[in-house]
Image (cartoon, rainbow, N blue to C red):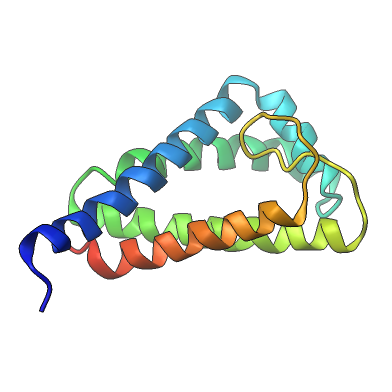
Length: 139
């Protein structure tokens, strides 16, 4: 049985880190939707008419999820599920781009650095943190 302090830490630490990640990356995207839409287009996975609506939706969804992790438990659970789904999709998209040899920025945080396999591993670490959040953030 976990003691109360460890249980509280296992609940709040993943929430704080993932919330900060999604608030920051969503904020960067909302501020420069054109750059984010260009990044989405660079993945060469979607038809042209879908890119701008998807970029807008993803940017705002990331912000909502980052905020929702701090609201009531039903909102938190929904946010954890959405964030996990988004990270899974982003990870598969990154793998696809790297496998096809396309040299682009991931579009994650506005850095502009070319994507590498390290970006995929970082996403896997974020997914592991989400698993901890999904398991322990139930209150």
